[in-house]
Length: 114
Image (cartoon, rainbow, N blue to C red; front, side, top):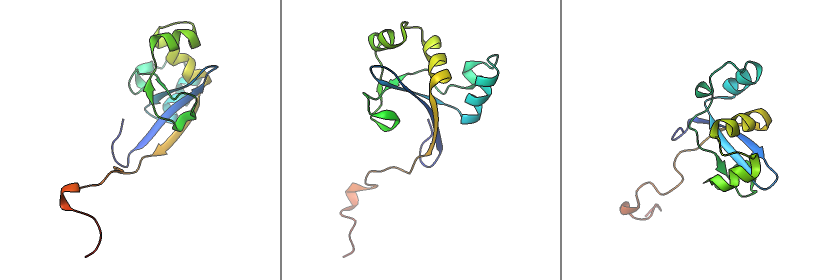
């Protein structure tokens, strides 16, 4: 996943019990894979983790989905089959992340003019 101002592309799948998210290299890679399934998943998916957001949509806090959650939602714990389902039925979202959101240098004192 990119740091700073890099673009971030994810696929959001709204399941029956939870929302699931995977990160992908680009929206173009997802669209190419949907047209031609011979494209290797390794060229589409950016990491093989499936995240859940506890029904908070694509913008919720991302927790790694447990094996039990995945089996309950998708009927399997096979990561490749789950990723394929999310890529087929999920919606692609592209965002540009802002820089770090926290204080830059807290040891330097408050950031107010004197």
